[in-house]
Amino acid sequence: MARAAESAARMEAGQPVDAMPARSELQQPVARRNDCPDDHEQAQLEKQILRLHKRGTGILKIGKSLGIGTGTVQRVLTEQPRPLDVGASV
Image (cartoon, rainbow, N blue to C red; front, side, top):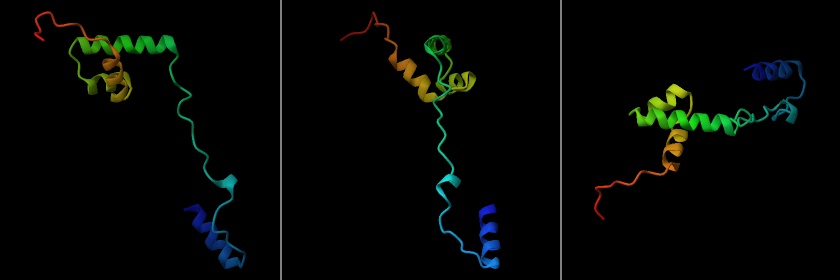
């Protein structure tokens, strides 16, 4: 919005108006992976996920309670080996 007002002011003053802002004025992308947990924190998080799942908590509630995405919860649950069913027929 401020850019439009600045362009309008330049046009009224008779100064040239650039169609594209300078590269330095463009917003730079933000790296979001800087706050990734280290191995110890990751192991603790996985233990919490598994403990909550074992108690019967759903994927959505686990993610919301731990402040993580449901994709992370699904990944942790699918990476864990499943116990063999003793009574299962093949």
